[in-house]
Image (cartoon, rainbow, N blue to C red; front, side):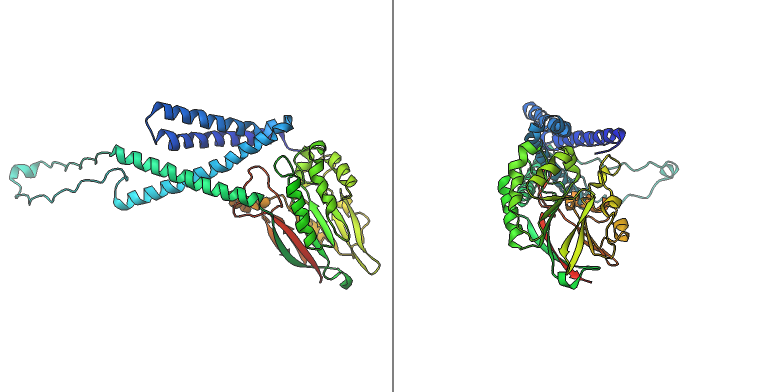
Length: 419
């Protein structure tokens, strides 16, 4: 992946500082504020330091020592828990603040009621010459027992809420993907191909966590849809051919009239994209690296165009739409496979009536769903601009924290209609 070293360093620095600050905040709310016991506070420091360090090192370690990937997944799982702890504490803190404001004090100790003063006698001449400012009422005493109770109640509630959300997210991540069906009118599609079906999978991320059992279930669900074509739009793997070949070999069992076609995503480049392209070709998949194939017969056909990942567009072999469509009959309908939902406007002008993409995971889990929606103009789902369409998959597996909250994984069945 071609990126500026300075940009990478700045990103790592920013993420590291944010991670450290979050762990300091969690220590204060979960340990320091809930007890004055030195042993308890020391245990909290040790625990959160032990959880923070692997998280900071995970990105580098997995590149240098691939076998440490399973440890990194545990660290990323903690990242998800930490995010939900942070959100829960912030929400509960806001509730406490609102209650305190409504009651007119800090929520620690209620102010004592003050009786109304007796009517003052008329001032004398002497008193008229000197004005004594009124004394401000004394601040109410802080109820330490109540403060401790509220801190413990807040911490306990946050732990329960974070645990519940994390548990649901993990169940959702390992649960078989939902099947979403959409119909798209493809400009130039012959009437003879009306109803042609494509099963679209993306971002499966086969690795130490997603293994052969998960893949066999994906294959079963895809075959049940009886597709004419299966496409996989990148980020299939997170590991080497040697380690993951058995799990990925499940794709040999996919059944589609025109076969299974694959393009690279950014993660393939982390693990030698060329080696994976050769391995998948050996398993019977058609790998499209900046080229196209024509599907159909003399009675009707369309072009399936595949490009390498957008992140490598400046590399020795990366996204090259011009090379992929070279020699293509522009009057023939075309479907473009591109891992990232980038350059769609240019692809549409080049005659790509439908682009199938992934990469965003739809944010994968809340609140990152909101961040991805803000960053990506086309974050998930079906989009249309004139006669051109784009479908961005939320992904069929997961990456990083094994969590799926408010962004379930999916297998997409696209039915092509003649325009």
